[in-house]
Image (cartoon, rainbow, N blue to C red; front, side, top):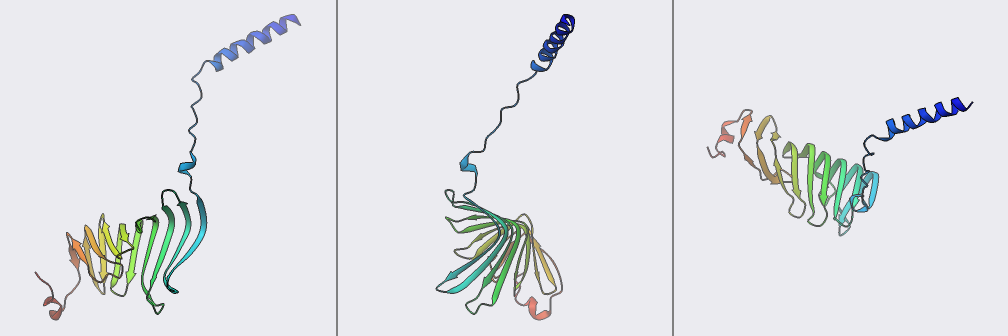
Length: 185
């Protein structure tokens, strides 16, 4: 029996040395409370009003709100902009959005689509100044109006796609003679 005890202890010590002399376990990185959102909400619907008139209806699959940073991160976002008579003037859809609550800016990312009676805007990245309703899109833009398509590198417009400036433009479509009078070649 004594021989078995010595063998057991010898094997135990050998295994302890073999497995115990490796690299120390990686130190765990902890997330501080500053990195965590104050609120996390799923299936969100936000209605913004001004003097009892609904201006926007915003829906998102998920939002993370950081009160101290005045920042809201949202996934799968859809925004309806409404006129005073509650008709939809434009919509914006995107995969992700960052909302700077302090400056009232929204950065829309991924499959961004803006629709209005004036056309449809497609872009991967858009900055919307919600104070002035001015939009700046970059990283390639496509504007579709009727049967005409304009493409460019960047675009500046308003949320209703009324006044548009496109940079580095290419186009597809057909112009009528009366439409060419309005174009400054």
